[in-house]
Amino acid sequence: MLNVPRSCLESLKSLVKYAYCLFKIFFDEGKVDEEGTEKMDTFASVLLRISDGLKKDHLEAMKFLCSDDIGKKKLEKVDNGIQLFQYLREMQKIGMGNTQYLRTLLTNIKRPDLLEILDEFEKHGSGPQEDLPDAKEQDKLDIATQLIAENLGKDWRMYGRKLGIKDAKLDHIREKHPYNLQEQVIELIQEWRKMHGAKASAEDLIQALRKCNLNLTADLIRQKLS
Image (tube, rainbow, N blue to C red):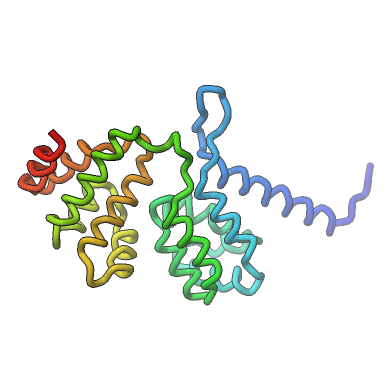
């Protein structure tokens, strides 16, 4: 029987665990396209870049900050950022349209350079063109977005919840544009459009308005688009 040093076994174990987390975080679990290949999660590439930029002391600080949300036993097994991010994704603390928790962690460990990676992703997104609605629908969405921004006002948070935007993201939008309601609404709808990709439609925005009893704005959009 081959005798393998314990240190080598531990290193191999860590490598396998890291590879498994990479696989989990890069691919949507259970989602397979028509050709049978897994769909790569574009947000995962951002997490990988952030993980690669973490030093050991920063990782330990992030683990400490997450201790109330992730059990001690799980945190003891975390050797790198990818493993930590995987736990946070499973708990729905972070995700494509929900980055406030991660943003807070990076702010607390004083890593503005890693925050810039997140800012760049949120500003430009990372979805391919085929994940966008067709040109005609995009025009409708742009018109609807502008009219909603001009008319929604203080009801924007209620509207955001109807669109499925998490409270953490709504808080981030408010903090980013504290004195500009129109900018808050525009970014809110941009987040929603990123979440839904090619399936985003002006009709969905109208229906969400009606669910908030904002029928005047809904009728205004309908009239403008007709």
